[in-house]
Amino acid sequence: MAEVKQTVVEGVDALTLNGKSDADTVETATDAQAQETAGDEATTNADDVVDPWNVASSNDAGVDYDKLIKRFGSSKIDDELIARFEKITGKPAHHFLRRGLFFSHRDLHTILTLREQGKPFYLYTGRGPSSGSLHIGHLVPFIMTKWLQETFDVPLIIQLTDDEKTLWKDLKIEEAIKLARENAKDIVAMGFDVNKTFIFNNLEFMGKCPAMYQNIIRIQKCVTFNQVKGIFGFGDSDIIGKIGFPAAQAAPALSSTFPFIFGNKKVHCLIPCAIDQDPYFRMTRDVAPRLGFPKCALLHSSFFPALQGAKTKMSASEQNSAVFLTDTPKQVKNKINKYAFSGGRVTVEEHRKLGGIPDIDVAYQLLKFFLEDDTKLEEVRVAYSKGEMLTGEIKKLAIETVTPIVEQHQAARKLITDEVLDKYFELRPLKYGS
Image 1: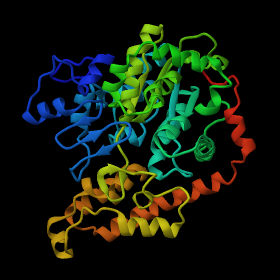
Image 2: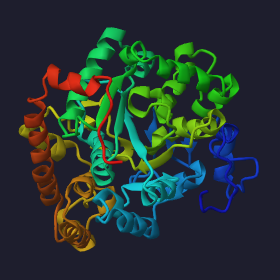
Image 3: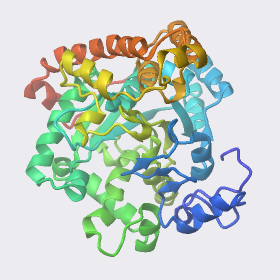
Image 4: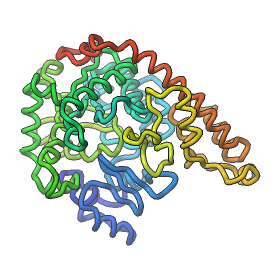
Protein backbone atom coordinates (compact mmCIF):
# COMPACT_ATOMS: atom_id res chain seq x y z
CA MET A 1 0.00 0.00 0.00
CA ALA A 2 1.43 3.37 -0.95
CA GLU A 3 2.89 5.52 1.79
CA VAL A 4 0.69 8.56 1.21
CA LYS A 5 -1.66 10.73 3.22
CA GLN A 6 -4.79 9.59 1.50
CA THR A 7 -6.49 6.23 1.60
CA VAL A 8 -5.72 4.34 -1.58
CA VAL A 9 -8.31 2.01 -3.06
CA GLU A 10 -6.67 -0.29 -5.60
CA GLY A 11 -9.66 -2.09 -7.07
CA VAL A 12 -11.27 -1.51 -10.44
CA ASP A 13 -13.81 0.94 -9.02
CA ALA A 14 -11.04 3.13 -7.62
CA LEU A 15 -9.69 3.67 -11.11
CA THR A 16 -12.78 5.53 -12.24
CA LEU A 17 -11.76 8.58 -10.23
CA ASN A 18 -8.32 9.03 -11.77
CA GLY A 19 -6.66 6.84 -9.18
CA LYS A 20 -8.41 8.47 -6.23
CA SER A 21 -11.07 6.98 -4.01
CA ASP A 22 -13.95 8.94 -2.52
CA ALA A 23 -12.07 8.85 0.78
CA ASP A 24 -9.04 10.65 -0.66
CA THR A 25 -8.07 13.99 0.78
CA VAL A 26 -7.99 16.65 -1.90
CA GLU A 27 -5.25 19.01 -0.78
CA THR A 28 -5.52 21.85 -3.32
CA ALA A 29 -8.00 23.41 -5.67
CA THR A 30 -5.87 22.19 -8.56
CA ASP A 31 -6.14 18.63 -7.30
CA ALA A 32 -9.88 19.02 -6.96
CA GLN A 33 -10.22 20.28 -10.51
CA ALA A 34 -8.04 17.45 -11.80
CA GLN A 35 -10.21 14.91 -10.00
CA GLU A 36 -13.43 16.40 -11.35
CA THR A 37 -12.28 16.72 -14.94
CA ALA A 38 -10.57 13.34 -15.24
CA GLY A 39 -13.05 10.86 -16.64
CA ASP A 40 -10.46 8.16 -17.04
CA GLU A 41 -7.21 6.78 -15.69
CA ALA A 42 -5.32 9.55 -17.48
CA THR A 43 -3.48 11.12 -14.57
CA THR A 44 -3.83 14.88 -14.65
CA ASN A 45 -1.70 16.77 -12.20
CA ALA A 46 -1.94 20.53 -12.55
CA ASP A 47 -0.23 20.12 -15.91
CA ASP A 48 0.58 16.40 -16.38
CA VAL A 49 -1.38 13.94 -18.49
CA VAL A 50 -0.39 10.28 -18.27
CA ASP A 51 -2.32 7.40 -19.80
CA PRO A 52 -1.39 4.41 -21.99
CA TRP A 53 -1.53 6.57 -25.13
CA ASN A 54 -0.58 10.08 -24.03
CA VAL A 55 2.17 11.58 -21.89
CA ALA A 56 2.41 15.36 -21.60
CA SER A 57 3.61 17.94 -19.09
CA SER A 58 3.95 21.72 -19.21
CA ASN A 59 7.02 21.49 -16.96
CA ASP A 60 10.40 21.46 -18.73
CA ALA A 61 11.58 18.84 -16.22
CA GLY A 62 8.71 16.56 -17.25
CA VAL A 63 6.19 14.62 -15.22
CA ASP A 64 6.13 15.04 -11.43
CA TYR A 65 6.69 11.40 -10.47
CA ASP A 66 6.14 11.88 -6.75
CA LYS A 67 2.64 13.18 -7.47
CA LEU A 68 2.11 10.36 -9.96
CA ILE A 69 2.97 7.78 -7.30
CA LYS A 70 0.39 9.29 -4.98
CA ARG A 71 -2.29 9.42 -7.64
CA PHE A 72 -1.70 5.89 -8.86
CA GLY A 73 -1.33 4.57 -5.32
CA SER A 74 1.93 2.77 -6.04
CA SER A 75 5.01 2.72 -3.79
CA LYS A 76 8.29 4.55 -4.24
CA ILE A 77 11.46 2.52 -4.70
CA ASP A 78 13.52 3.76 -1.77
CA ASP A 79 17.02 3.05 -0.46
CA GLU A 80 15.70 0.39 1.91
CA LEU A 81 14.13 -1.58 -0.93
CA ILE A 82 17.25 -1.26 -3.06
CA ALA A 83 19.36 -2.48 -0.12
CA ARG A 84 17.08 -5.50 0.31
CA PHE A 85 17.28 -6.17 -3.43
CA GLU A 86 21.08 -6.18 -3.30
CA LYS A 87 21.17 -8.37 -0.19
CA ILE A 88 18.91 -11.02 -1.69
CA THR A 89 20.48 -11.06 -5.16
CA GLY A 90 24.06 -10.61 -3.99
CA LYS A 91 24.56 -8.09 -6.81
CA PRO A 92 24.72 -4.30 -7.03
CA ALA A 93 21.43 -2.78 -8.14
CA HIS A 94 21.18 -1.81 -11.79
CA HIS A 95 21.96 1.85 -12.43
CA PHE A 96 18.34 2.34 -13.56
CA LEU A 97 17.34 1.55 -9.97
CA ARG A 98 20.17 3.49 -8.32
CA ARG A 99 19.36 6.62 -10.32
CA GLY A 100 15.62 6.44 -9.81
CA LEU A 101 14.85 5.79 -13.48
CA PHE A 102 12.79 2.84 -12.29
CA PHE A 103 11.18 4.68 -9.43
CA SER A 104 7.92 3.00 -8.43
CA HIS A 105 6.61 -0.49 -7.77
CA ARG A 106 3.75 -2.67 -6.68
CA ASP A 107 4.55 -5.67 -4.48
CA LEU A 108 8.25 -5.90 -5.34
CA HIS A 109 8.78 -6.98 -1.72
CA THR A 110 6.57 -10.01 -2.47
CA ILE A 111 8.84 -11.00 -5.36
CA LEU A 112 11.94 -10.65 -3.19
CA THR A 113 10.32 -12.78 -0.49
CA LEU A 114 9.56 -15.47 -3.08
CA ARG A 115 13.22 -15.47 -4.04
CA GLU A 116 14.24 -15.80 -0.37
CA GLN A 117 11.89 -18.77 -0.05
CA GLY A 118 13.13 -20.39 -3.26
CA LYS A 119 9.71 -20.06 -4.91
CA PRO A 120 9.27 -19.33 -8.63
CA PHE A 121 8.07 -16.27 -10.49
CA TYR A 122 8.29 -15.12 -14.10
CA LEU A 123 8.84 -11.85 -15.92
CA TYR A 124 6.37 -10.37 -18.38
CA THR A 125 6.82 -7.27 -20.52
CA GLY A 126 5.85 -6.19 -24.01
CA ARG A 127 5.85 -3.81 -26.92
CA GLY A 128 3.16 -2.32 -29.14
CA PRO A 129 4.62 -2.50 -32.68
CA SER A 130 3.76 0.79 -34.39
CA SER A 131 6.94 1.29 -36.42
CA GLY A 132 9.47 -0.85 -38.24
CA SER A 133 12.25 0.00 -35.79
CA LEU A 134 12.51 0.60 -32.08
CA HIS A 135 14.04 3.82 -30.81
CA ILE A 136 16.53 4.02 -27.95
CA GLY A 137 13.78 4.81 -25.43
CA HIS A 138 12.17 1.44 -26.19
CA LEU A 139 15.38 -0.26 -25.04
CA VAL A 140 14.92 0.88 -21.45
CA PRO A 141 12.32 -1.65 -20.19
CA PHE A 142 14.04 -4.42 -22.11
CA ILE A 143 17.47 -3.57 -20.69
CA MET A 144 15.96 -3.75 -17.21
CA THR A 145 14.05 -6.93 -17.99
CA LYS A 146 17.15 -8.66 -19.36
CA TRP A 147 19.09 -7.73 -16.23
CA LEU A 148 16.30 -9.05 -14.02
CA GLN A 149 16.13 -12.30 -15.99
CA GLU A 150 19.87 -12.84 -15.68
CA THR A 151 19.92 -11.82 -12.00
CA PHE A 152 17.06 -14.11 -10.94
CA ASP A 153 17.39 -16.83 -13.63
CA VAL A 154 13.67 -16.85 -14.40
CA PRO A 155 11.52 -17.30 -17.51
CA LEU A 156 10.44 -14.28 -19.54
CA ILE A 157 7.28 -13.67 -21.55
CA ILE A 158 7.31 -10.88 -24.16
CA GLN A 159 3.99 -9.87 -25.68
CA LEU A 160 3.72 -7.96 -28.96
CA THR A 161 0.34 -6.24 -29.06
CA ASP A 162 -0.11 -6.04 -32.83
CA ASP A 163 -3.87 -6.26 -32.24
CA GLU A 164 -3.76 -3.07 -30.18
CA LYS A 165 -1.91 -1.16 -32.88
CA THR A 166 -4.37 -2.37 -35.50
CA LEU A 167 -7.23 -1.07 -33.36
CA TRP A 168 -5.69 2.28 -32.43
CA LYS A 169 -3.79 3.17 -35.61
CA ASP A 170 -4.40 3.07 -39.35
CA LEU A 171 -2.72 -0.31 -39.70
CA LYS A 172 -3.96 -3.35 -41.57
CA ILE A 173 -3.72 -6.64 -39.70
CA GLU A 174 -1.10 -7.97 -42.09
CA GLU A 175 1.05 -4.87 -41.64
CA ALA A 176 0.77 -5.01 -37.85
CA ILE A 177 1.91 -8.66 -37.85
CA LYS A 178 4.89 -7.73 -40.02
CA LEU A 179 5.84 -4.87 -37.69
CA ALA A 180 5.58 -7.24 -34.72
CA ARG A 181 8.17 -9.56 -36.23
CA GLU A 182 10.48 -6.68 -37.13
CA ASN A 183 10.24 -5.33 -33.58
CA ALA A 184 10.84 -8.81 -32.21
CA LYS A 185 14.14 -8.96 -34.11
CA ASP A 186 15.16 -5.70 -32.45
CA ILE A 187 14.32 -7.22 -29.06
CA VAL A 188 16.08 -10.52 -29.71
CA ALA A 189 19.17 -8.59 -30.85
CA MET A 190 19.57 -7.39 -27.25
CA GLY A 191 20.73 -10.89 -26.35
CA PHE A 192 17.83 -12.56 -24.56
CA ASP A 193 18.42 -16.25 -23.81
CA VAL A 194 16.24 -18.29 -26.17
CA ASN A 195 16.04 -21.11 -23.61
CA LYS A 196 14.41 -18.80 -21.07
CA THR A 197 12.42 -16.44 -23.30
CA PHE A 198 9.10 -16.82 -25.11
CA ILE A 199 7.91 -14.13 -27.52
CA PHE A 200 4.49 -13.98 -29.13
CA ASN A 201 2.26 -11.61 -31.06
CA ASN A 202 -1.42 -11.60 -30.17
CA LEU A 203 -2.82 -11.81 -33.70
CA GLU A 204 -1.15 -15.18 -34.29
CA PHE A 205 -0.66 -16.67 -30.83
CA MET A 206 -4.33 -16.79 -29.88
CA GLY A 207 -5.03 -19.21 -32.71
CA LYS A 208 -2.30 -21.54 -31.45
CA CYS A 209 -3.01 -21.42 -27.71
CA PRO A 210 -6.70 -21.59 -26.68
CA ALA A 211 -5.71 -20.96 -23.03
CA MET A 212 -5.02 -17.30 -23.78
CA TYR A 213 -8.42 -16.58 -25.29
CA GLN A 214 -10.06 -18.50 -22.46
CA ASN A 215 -8.31 -16.29 -19.91
CA ILE A 216 -9.26 -13.18 -21.88
CA ILE A 217 -12.91 -14.18 -21.58
CA ARG A 218 -12.51 -14.89 -17.85
CA ILE A 219 -11.04 -11.41 -17.36
CA GLN A 220 -13.68 -9.72 -19.50
CA LYS A 221 -16.41 -11.30 -17.37
CA CYS A 222 -14.95 -9.56 -14.32
CA VAL A 223 -14.90 -5.98 -15.66
CA THR A 224 -17.99 -4.00 -16.61
CA PHE A 225 -18.31 -1.57 -19.49
CA ASN A 226 -18.63 1.34 -17.07
CA GLN A 227 -15.47 0.26 -15.29
CA VAL A 228 -13.38 -0.05 -18.45
CA LYS A 229 -14.66 3.35 -19.60
CA GLY A 230 -13.60 4.81 -16.28
CA ILE A 231 -10.17 3.20 -16.38
CA PHE A 232 -9.24 4.01 -19.96
CA GLY A 233 -11.49 6.92 -20.88
CA PHE A 234 -13.28 5.14 -23.73
CA GLY A 235 -16.21 7.03 -25.24
CA ASP A 236 -19.40 5.99 -26.96
CA SER A 237 -17.82 6.44 -30.39
CA ASP A 238 -14.85 4.15 -29.70
CA ILE A 239 -14.85 0.87 -31.56
CA ILE A 240 -15.71 -2.20 -29.52
CA GLY A 241 -12.28 -3.71 -30.18
CA LYS A 242 -10.67 -1.06 -27.99
CA ILE A 243 -13.08 -1.77 -25.16
CA GLY A 244 -12.24 -5.46 -25.15
CA PHE A 245 -8.49 -5.12 -25.70
CA PRO A 246 -7.29 -4.49 -22.10
CA ALA A 247 -8.07 -8.10 -21.22
CA ALA A 248 -5.57 -9.21 -23.88
CA GLN A 249 -2.78 -7.26 -22.20
CA ALA A 250 -3.85 -8.55 -18.80
CA ALA A 251 -3.98 -12.25 -19.74
CA PRO A 252 -0.19 -12.91 -19.81
CA ALA A 253 -0.06 -11.93 -16.12
CA LEU A 254 -1.97 -15.18 -15.42
CA SER A 255 0.45 -18.10 -15.68
CA SER A 256 -2.22 -20.48 -17.00
CA THR A 257 -2.15 -18.48 -20.26
CA PHE A 258 1.02 -20.47 -21.01
CA PRO A 259 0.28 -24.12 -20.13
CA PHE A 260 3.24 -25.30 -22.22
CA ILE A 261 5.54 -23.42 -19.83
CA PHE A 262 3.83 -23.49 -16.42
CA GLY A 263 1.35 -26.36 -16.70
CA ASN A 264 -1.46 -25.73 -14.22
CA LYS A 265 0.75 -23.96 -11.65
CA LYS A 266 -0.32 -20.52 -10.46
CA VAL A 267 2.97 -18.66 -10.62
CA HIS A 268 3.66 -15.08 -9.53
CA CYS A 269 4.51 -12.51 -12.19
CA LEU A 270 6.72 -9.40 -12.20
CA ILE A 271 6.10 -6.80 -14.91
CA PRO A 272 8.75 -4.17 -15.72
CA CYS A 273 7.08 -1.38 -17.73
CA ALA A 274 6.72 2.36 -18.09
CA ILE A 275 4.22 3.74 -15.59
CA ASP A 276 1.78 4.77 -18.33
CA GLN A 277 0.93 1.06 -18.67
CA ASP A 278 -0.09 0.82 -15.02
CA PRO A 279 -3.86 1.18 -15.66
CA TYR A 280 -3.89 -2.19 -17.45
CA PHE A 281 -2.29 -3.92 -14.52
CA ARG A 282 -4.24 -2.20 -11.79
CA MET A 283 -7.24 -3.73 -13.50
CA THR A 284 -5.39 -7.06 -13.70
CA ARG A 285 -4.48 -6.95 -10.01
CA ASP A 286 -8.13 -6.48 -9.11
CA VAL A 287 -9.28 -9.37 -11.29
CA ALA A 288 -6.53 -11.93 -10.62
CA PRO A 289 -7.52 -12.92 -7.04
CA ARG A 290 -11.12 -13.33 -8.17
CA LEU A 291 -9.85 -15.90 -10.67
CA GLY A 292 -7.64 -17.61 -8.08
CA PHE A 293 -4.31 -16.13 -9.19
CA PRO A 294 -1.77 -13.99 -7.32
CA LYS A 295 -1.65 -10.29 -8.10
CA CYS A 296 1.07 -9.34 -10.57
CA ALA A 297 3.90 -7.21 -9.21
CA LEU A 298 5.11 -4.18 -11.14
CA LEU A 299 8.31 -2.23 -11.59
CA HIS A 300 7.65 1.21 -13.12
CA SER A 301 10.08 3.22 -15.22
CA SER A 302 10.02 6.94 -15.83
CA PHE A 303 9.49 8.21 -19.36
CA PHE A 304 12.32 8.52 -21.84
CA PRO A 305 12.16 12.14 -23.02
CA ALA A 306 11.63 13.27 -26.58
CA LEU A 307 14.64 15.04 -28.03
CA GLN A 308 12.61 18.24 -27.88
CA GLY A 309 12.34 17.96 -24.11
CA ALA A 310 10.80 16.05 -21.21
CA LYS A 311 7.36 17.62 -21.66
CA THR A 312 6.54 14.52 -23.67
CA LYS A 313 8.10 11.09 -24.21
CA MET A 314 10.14 9.92 -27.17
CA SER A 315 7.78 8.62 -29.84
CA ALA A 316 8.22 6.32 -32.82
CA SER A 317 5.53 8.36 -34.58
CA GLU A 318 7.70 11.49 -34.58
CA GLN A 319 10.90 10.92 -36.58
CA ASN A 320 12.73 13.92 -35.19
CA SER A 321 11.75 13.28 -31.58
CA ALA A 322 13.65 10.01 -31.45
CA VAL A 323 16.97 8.30 -32.08
CA PHE A 324 16.06 5.09 -33.88
CA LEU A 325 18.06 1.89 -33.78
CA THR A 326 18.31 2.12 -37.59
CA ASP A 327 19.86 5.62 -37.55
CA THR A 328 23.35 6.10 -38.93
CA PRO A 329 26.06 7.71 -36.77
CA LYS A 330 25.59 10.88 -38.81
CA GLN A 331 21.84 10.88 -38.14
CA VAL A 332 22.38 10.29 -34.41
CA LYS A 333 24.82 13.20 -34.29
CA ASN A 334 22.59 15.54 -36.29
CA LYS A 335 19.45 14.72 -34.29
CA ILE A 336 21.08 15.27 -30.91
CA ASN A 337 22.88 18.42 -32.00
CA LYS A 338 19.84 19.91 -33.73
CA TYR A 339 16.88 18.76 -31.65
CA ALA A 340 18.05 17.84 -28.14
CA PHE A 341 16.53 20.38 -25.75
CA SER A 342 19.22 22.27 -23.86
CA GLY A 343 19.38 23.20 -20.23
CA GLY A 344 22.08 25.71 -21.07
CA ARG A 345 21.83 29.48 -20.93
CA VAL A 346 21.27 31.91 -23.80
CA THR A 347 24.88 33.04 -24.01
CA VAL A 348 28.21 31.47 -23.11
CA GLU A 349 28.85 34.26 -20.63
CA GLU A 350 25.53 33.68 -18.88
CA HIS A 351 26.10 29.93 -18.88
CA ARG A 352 29.55 30.31 -17.33
CA LYS A 353 28.07 32.55 -14.66
CA LEU A 354 24.82 30.73 -13.82
CA GLY A 355 25.50 27.17 -14.98
CA GLY A 356 23.23 24.80 -16.88
CA ILE A 357 20.16 22.94 -15.65
CA PRO A 358 20.77 19.17 -16.02
CA ASP A 359 17.23 18.19 -15.03
CA ILE A 360 15.77 19.71 -18.21
CA ASP A 361 18.73 19.01 -20.50
CA VAL A 362 17.99 16.10 -22.86
CA ALA A 363 21.67 15.33 -23.53
CA TYR A 364 22.18 14.92 -19.79
CA GLN A 365 19.10 12.71 -19.59
CA LEU A 366 20.55 10.50 -22.34
CA LEU A 367 23.67 10.15 -20.22
CA LYS A 368 21.61 9.41 -17.13
CA PHE A 369 20.07 6.44 -18.92
CA PHE A 370 23.03 5.14 -20.91
CA LEU A 371 26.28 6.26 -19.24
CA GLU A 372 26.86 3.46 -16.75
CA ASP A 373 29.76 5.09 -14.88
CA ASP A 374 28.22 6.79 -11.83
CA THR A 375 31.36 8.78 -11.07
CA LYS A 376 31.61 10.14 -14.62
CA LEU A 377 27.92 11.06 -14.64
CA GLU A 378 28.25 12.99 -11.40
CA GLU A 379 31.30 14.81 -12.74
CA VAL A 380 29.27 15.84 -15.79
CA ARG A 381 26.33 16.97 -13.67
CA VAL A 382 28.50 19.13 -11.43
CA ALA A 383 30.51 20.62 -14.30
CA TYR A 384 27.39 21.45 -16.31
CA SER A 385 25.61 22.89 -13.25
CA LYS A 386 28.60 25.14 -12.53
CA GLY A 387 28.93 26.30 -16.13
CA GLU A 388 32.27 24.56 -16.57
CA MET A 389 30.78 22.35 -19.30
CA LEU A 390 28.91 23.91 -22.23
CA THR A 391 25.88 22.61 -24.09
CA GLY A 392 27.96 21.60 -27.10
CA GLU A 393 30.27 19.59 -24.88
CA ILE A 394 27.52 17.67 -23.11
CA LYS A 395 25.83 16.95 -26.45
CA LYS A 396 29.14 15.65 -27.78
CA LEU A 397 29.43 13.28 -24.82
CA ALA A 398 25.84 12.13 -25.32
CA ILE A 399 26.55 11.41 -28.99
CA GLU A 400 29.70 9.47 -28.07
CA THR A 401 27.68 7.44 -25.54
CA VAL A 402 24.60 6.70 -27.65
CA THR A 403 26.21 6.05 -31.04
CA PRO A 404 28.09 2.85 -30.01
CA ILE A 405 24.89 1.47 -28.48
CA VAL A 406 23.05 1.97 -31.77
CA GLU A 407 25.94 0.56 -33.83
CA GLN A 408 26.33 -2.51 -31.62
CA HIS A 409 22.61 -3.17 -31.83
CA GLN A 410 22.66 -2.90 -35.62
CA ALA A 411 25.48 -5.43 -35.83
CA ALA A 412 23.60 -7.86 -33.58
CA ARG A 413 20.34 -7.26 -35.47
CA LYS A 414 21.91 -8.38 -38.75
CA LEU A 415 22.42 -11.83 -37.23
CA ILE A 416 18.74 -12.32 -36.37
CA THR A 417 17.31 -14.32 -39.25
CA ASP A 418 13.72 -15.50 -39.51
CA GLU A 419 14.92 -18.94 -38.43
CA VAL A 420 16.54 -17.52 -35.28
CA LEU A 421 13.41 -15.50 -34.51
CA ASP A 422 11.10 -18.49 -34.96
CA LYS A 423 12.87 -20.28 -32.11
CA TYR A 424 11.72 -17.57 -29.69
CA PHE A 425 8.13 -17.82 -30.99
CA GLU A 426 7.99 -21.62 -30.73
CA LEU A 427 5.54 -22.99 -28.14
CA ARG A 428 7.80 -24.98 -25.85
CA PRO A 429 8.87 -25.46 -22.22
CA LEU A 430 11.49 -23.00 -21.02
CA LYS A 431 14.65 -23.89 -19.11
CA TYR A 432 15.55 -21.85 -16.05
CA GLY A 433 17.12 -22.18 -12.65
CA SER A 434 14.00 -21.94 -10.48
